[in-house]
Length: 160
Image 1 (cartoon, rainbow, N blue to C red):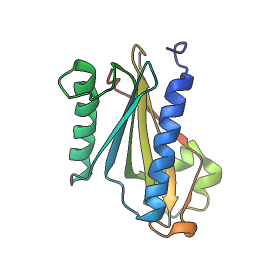
Image 2: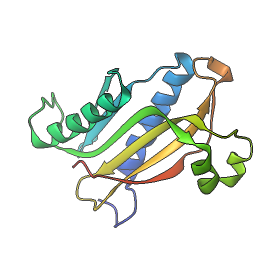
Image 3: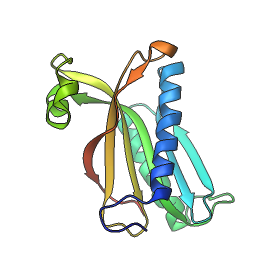
Image 4: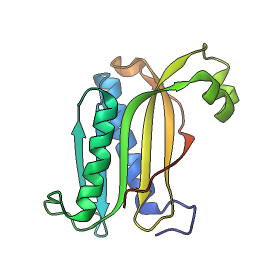
């Protein structure tokens, strides 16, 4: 595990890989559902998605799936004990929140809510887990799809 408050290289790689895959899906199809991924100490990765509607049910499922893998109540297949996790989903962020996090990005936004890829991530033994978001536009439009750099969205409950 990384020092307190820092993200380990393993967690960084897991989260950025899942974010990249999610951005690709959003560019290609405009759809994502909720996707969860875990990695063990041998860097074996297991990923699963849910298209449950509404999105909050899919998010609850993903969190339960990660916790179940850690507890051994969900089949791990060939995966060892999970040491890091990430969950990505398409959500919305209020323009006023963007203004607080990145004033330069907010200047081009209208009031209201904007599509965002949200990612929650954490690792075993860490006192907290974190979340980030990236504004997205042009869902399903291939080369016209665009996104911002990740912005911090605060702490979330650790799942491992």
